[in-house]
Image 1 (cartoon, helix red, strand yellow):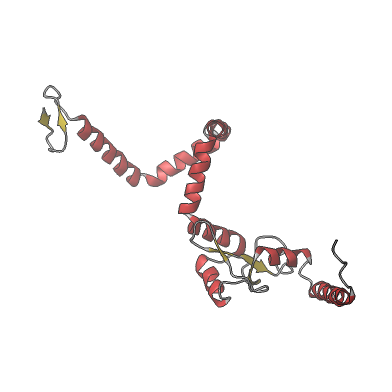
Image 2 (image 1 turned 30 degrees about the horizontal axis):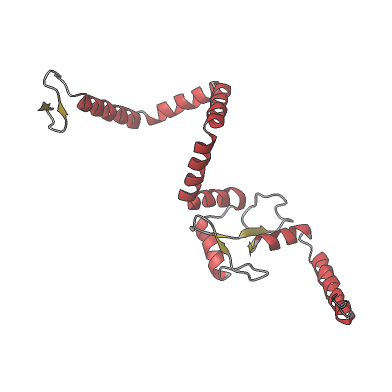
Length: 195
Protein backbone atom coordinates (compact mmCIF):
# COMPACT_ATOMS: atom_id res chain seq x y z
CA UNK A 1 0.00 0.00 0.00
CA UNK A 2 1.17 3.48 -0.81
CA UNK A 3 -0.26 6.97 -0.49
CA UNK A 4 -1.16 9.17 -3.44
CA UNK A 5 0.87 12.22 -4.50
CA UNK A 6 -1.36 14.50 -2.47
CA UNK A 7 -0.93 12.24 0.54
CA UNK A 8 -4.65 12.01 1.16
CA UNK A 9 -5.59 8.46 0.09
CA UNK A 10 -4.16 4.95 0.39
CA UNK A 11 -4.16 2.59 -2.62
CA UNK A 12 -2.49 -0.54 -4.01
CA UNK A 13 1.11 -0.36 -5.30
CA UNK A 14 0.18 -1.28 -8.89
CA UNK A 15 -2.23 1.70 -9.27
CA UNK A 16 -0.40 4.59 -10.95
CA UNK A 17 -2.94 7.34 -10.32
CA UNK A 18 -5.21 7.62 -7.28
CA UNK A 19 -8.86 7.18 -8.28
CA UNK A 20 -10.10 9.33 -5.41
CA UNK A 21 -7.81 12.21 -6.46
CA UNK A 22 -8.99 11.89 -10.08
CA UNK A 23 -12.62 11.96 -8.91
CA UNK A 24 -11.99 15.03 -6.74
CA UNK A 25 -10.20 16.93 -9.54
CA UNK A 26 -13.01 16.12 -11.99
CA UNK A 27 -15.57 17.37 -9.50
CA UNK A 28 -13.60 20.58 -8.92
CA UNK A 29 -13.25 21.13 -12.70
CA UNK A 30 -16.98 20.57 -13.14
CA UNK A 31 -17.78 23.00 -10.32
CA UNK A 32 -15.49 25.66 -11.83
CA UNK A 33 -17.07 25.12 -15.29
CA UNK A 34 -20.60 25.42 -13.84
CA UNK A 35 -19.72 28.62 -11.99
CA UNK A 36 -18.07 30.11 -15.07
CA UNK A 37 -20.90 29.18 -17.48
CA UNK A 38 -23.86 29.45 -15.07
CA UNK A 39 -26.18 31.52 -17.29
CA UNK A 40 -25.50 29.43 -20.40
CA UNK A 41 -26.16 26.16 -18.54
CA UNK A 42 -29.30 27.64 -16.98
CA UNK A 43 -30.66 28.52 -20.42
CA UNK A 44 -29.84 25.04 -21.78
CA UNK A 45 -31.62 23.35 -18.86
CA UNK A 46 -34.63 25.63 -19.28
CA UNK A 47 -34.87 24.83 -23.01
CA UNK A 48 -34.53 21.12 -22.29
CA UNK A 49 -37.31 21.25 -19.66
CA UNK A 50 -39.64 23.12 -22.03
CA UNK A 51 -38.90 20.73 -24.89
CA UNK A 52 -39.30 17.55 -22.78
CA UNK A 53 -41.96 18.73 -20.30
CA UNK A 54 -44.31 15.82 -20.94
CA UNK A 55 -41.59 13.20 -20.53
CA UNK A 56 -40.25 14.83 -17.34
CA UNK A 57 -43.75 15.00 -15.81
CA UNK A 58 -44.43 11.34 -16.63
CA UNK A 59 -41.13 10.35 -15.04
CA UNK A 60 -41.91 12.40 -11.92
CA UNK A 61 -45.37 10.80 -11.59
CA UNK A 62 -43.95 7.28 -11.94
CA UNK A 63 -41.17 7.98 -9.45
CA UNK A 64 -43.57 9.53 -6.95
CA UNK A 65 -46.04 6.64 -7.19
CA UNK A 66 -43.22 4.12 -6.61
CA UNK A 67 -41.64 6.06 -3.72
CA UNK A 68 -44.70 7.72 -2.19
CA UNK A 69 -43.74 7.18 1.48
CA UNK A 70 -40.18 8.36 0.91
CA UNK A 71 -41.37 11.47 -0.99
CA UNK A 72 -43.97 12.38 1.63
CA UNK A 73 -41.39 12.10 4.39
CA UNK A 74 -38.92 14.16 2.33
CA UNK A 75 -41.53 16.88 1.69
CA UNK A 76 -42.62 17.07 5.31
CA UNK A 77 -38.99 17.33 6.46
CA UNK A 78 -38.36 20.05 3.87
CA UNK A 79 -41.48 21.92 5.02
CA UNK A 80 -40.45 21.78 8.67
CA UNK A 81 -36.84 22.76 7.89
CA UNK A 82 -37.82 25.67 5.61
CA UNK A 83 -41.08 26.80 7.26
CA UNK A 84 -40.10 30.47 7.45
CA UNK A 85 -38.97 30.52 3.84
CA UNK A 86 -42.24 28.94 2.66
CA UNK A 87 -44.34 31.27 4.86
CA UNK A 88 -42.52 34.32 3.52
CA UNK A 89 -42.98 33.15 -0.09
CA UNK A 90 -46.75 32.74 0.49
CA UNK A 91 -47.02 36.13 2.21
CA UNK A 92 -45.25 37.85 -0.68
CA UNK A 93 -47.26 35.99 -3.31
CA UNK A 94 -50.74 36.50 -1.83
CA UNK A 95 -50.53 39.55 0.44
CA UNK A 96 -47.53 41.49 -0.88
CA UNK A 97 -45.90 41.67 2.59
CA UNK A 98 -42.79 40.00 3.97
CA UNK A 99 -42.30 37.97 7.14
CA UNK A 100 -40.91 40.97 9.06
CA UNK A 101 -44.14 42.95 8.55
CA UNK A 102 -46.20 39.88 9.50
CA UNK A 103 -44.18 39.45 12.71
CA UNK A 104 -44.53 43.17 13.49
CA UNK A 105 -48.32 42.88 13.08
CA UNK A 106 -48.26 39.84 15.39
CA UNK A 107 -46.37 41.80 18.05
CA UNK A 108 -48.73 44.81 17.86
CA UNK A 109 -51.71 42.43 18.27
CA UNK A 110 -49.97 40.75 21.24
CA UNK A 111 -49.76 37.40 19.38
CA UNK A 112 -53.55 37.07 19.38
CA UNK A 113 -56.55 37.32 17.04
CA UNK A 114 -57.77 40.89 16.45
CA UNK A 115 -61.42 39.90 17.10
CA UNK A 116 -61.68 37.10 19.67
CA UNK A 117 -58.31 37.82 21.36
CA UNK A 118 -57.41 34.11 21.45
CA UNK A 119 -53.65 33.53 21.49
CA UNK A 120 -52.07 32.47 18.21
CA UNK A 121 -51.11 28.81 17.89
CA UNK A 122 -47.47 28.01 17.21
CA UNK A 123 -46.99 26.09 13.95
CA UNK A 124 -45.80 22.46 14.21
CA UNK A 125 -42.41 23.58 12.86
CA UNK A 126 -42.22 25.91 15.93
CA UNK A 127 -40.91 28.69 13.69
CA UNK A 128 -43.95 30.97 13.31
CA UNK A 129 -47.44 31.62 14.67
CA UNK A 130 -50.50 30.68 12.65
CA UNK A 131 -52.88 33.59 12.08
CA UNK A 132 -54.67 34.46 8.83
CA UNK A 133 -54.01 37.77 7.10
CA UNK A 134 -57.32 39.64 6.76
CA UNK A 135 -57.78 42.14 3.93
CA UNK A 136 -60.54 44.33 2.51
CA UNK A 137 -62.30 42.38 -0.25
CA UNK A 138 -63.76 45.59 -1.73
CA UNK A 139 -60.23 46.66 -2.70
CA UNK A 140 -58.92 43.23 -3.76
CA UNK A 141 -61.79 40.73 -4.22
CA UNK A 142 -59.56 37.67 -4.65
CA UNK A 143 -56.91 36.03 -2.49
CA UNK A 144 -54.05 38.08 -3.99
CA UNK A 145 -53.92 41.58 -2.56
CA UNK A 146 -52.11 44.83 -3.21
CA UNK A 147 -50.77 44.87 0.37
CA UNK A 148 -52.38 48.25 1.18
CA UNK A 149 -55.80 46.84 2.12
CA UNK A 150 -54.60 44.50 4.89
CA UNK A 151 -56.67 45.02 8.05
CA UNK A 152 -55.02 42.70 10.55
CA UNK A 153 -54.40 39.11 11.63
CA UNK A 154 -57.27 36.81 12.58
CA UNK A 155 -57.62 33.24 13.77
CA UNK A 156 -59.06 30.81 11.22
CA UNK A 157 -62.56 30.82 12.78
CA UNK A 158 -62.90 34.61 12.84
CA UNK A 159 -61.51 34.91 9.33
CA UNK A 160 -64.05 32.37 8.01
CA UNK A 161 -66.86 34.06 9.95
CA UNK A 162 -66.10 37.46 8.43
CA UNK A 163 -65.90 35.83 5.01
CA UNK A 164 -69.27 34.14 5.55
CA UNK A 165 -70.81 37.53 6.41
CA UNK A 166 -69.23 38.95 3.23
CA UNK A 167 -67.29 41.67 5.15
CA UNK A 168 -70.55 43.53 5.76
CA UNK A 169 -70.76 45.41 9.10
CA UNK A 170 -74.57 45.67 8.80
CA UNK A 171 -74.94 41.89 8.45
CA UNK A 172 -72.56 41.35 11.37
CA UNK A 173 -74.50 43.78 13.60
CA UNK A 174 -77.77 42.06 12.60
CA UNK A 175 -76.23 38.71 13.60
CA UNK A 176 -75.15 40.20 16.95
CA UNK A 177 -78.71 41.54 17.56
CA UNK A 178 -80.14 38.13 16.70
CA UNK A 179 -77.83 36.39 19.20
CA UNK A 180 -78.66 38.93 21.92
CA UNK A 181 -82.42 38.53 21.38
CA UNK A 182 -82.03 34.76 21.64
CA UNK A 183 -80.15 35.16 24.96
CA UNK A 184 -83.09 37.15 26.39
CA UNK A 185 -85.60 34.43 25.44
CA UNK A 186 -83.29 31.74 26.89
CA UNK A 187 -83.34 33.45 30.31
CA UNK A 188 -87.17 33.13 30.54
CA UNK A 189 -87.19 29.41 29.65
CA UNK A 190 -86.95 27.03 32.60
CA UNK A 191 -84.94 23.87 32.01
CA UNK A 192 -86.78 20.54 31.80
CA UNK A 193 -86.42 18.24 34.80
CA UNK A 194 -84.06 15.31 34.29
CA UNK A 195 -85.26 11.76 34.56
